[in-house]
Image (cartoon, rainbow, N blue to C red):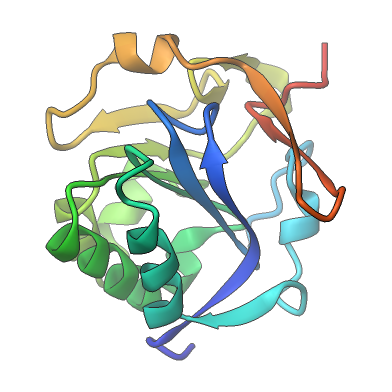
Length: 188
């Protein structure tokens, strides 16, 4: 994978349910974990989405930094594009005050073994780790299932901050498109 390019599924520049405060959200395309019952199965195929230059994506994020608190990266599986992800997160941290929250289907232990993960962990504020398990579904406080773990890596946020996040939102795009987002908002 090209370190200067990320495969992107969708970008949402203004979300209230994907982390504390207003957030710029990036869903990457491609995931070989394929958790049964995943809320985003359309992000699994590597062929979907579009390639985007890390510099262009960082530019979009930084252009919004006065109106957002941070960036949330989800997927797909972001760590399957770790070198480009490291480049993006490094640019955000070096050029702004924005926080970074990352969702991964890999467990904390698996992440520790991924080359490049130490740099990534050093540049993110919150990591939610572990595969989605439908039999452990919780859908609260950014946790989709009870087996997932939350790692507060910078001290910027706490469990109370995550508990205060609204459950879901529907965003109407300028083109009339609808984006439903949040922690699995439409299942009971």
